[in-house]
Image (cartoon, rainbow, N blue to C red; front, side, top):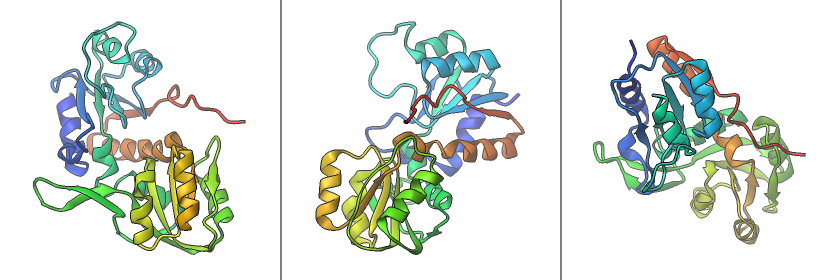
Length: 259
């Protein structure tokens, strides 16, 4: 029997939970280490439908990017996904900013999806690994063939299968790109200082677009979901190779549609 604790410890080996950001709640948020995890459902979020899907498929563990419990909980309601998971005996592990900031994090996966050359440069650091002392933070920097802002926007939409895509033209050709998974506009200035002419991320607000245009940076919003869901095949492959456990990528997780 593969246990939840074994899965947790393995994930901790390549995306240490100790390196999550202060605001985060990555780790085991529902269930116990002793529970069976012979079948795992992978999703970006442990929504109510994802919990029902896990129950229907006989999965003892839901492994997500966003934690099942993020903020402090002061009451339990059966309508809450994590309460439903607990009542069904399904454990939940989330690897959020711990995976974002791993040595090979989701931003690095974005570089691979785009087909660019990873420069191994971290655009922004905001903390240190308490064990190794190495800087920890967000984003990845990559070299790309010289292209226009529109060409990068079109490539991003295609590669991330974005439901919709918004972007602002930085006014110059692009040879160095920063990638930041999820909502990562915070690295815009750091990316520019590191030599990037563009940032590909998600959940960009109007003022972020305005500031990017002002400082001459192409800023592309390829979608929060789209820039992070790419981690699920990666996690599936690693877990199946390590444990021979059956891992299923959720089919109820993707709810955002575009027209």
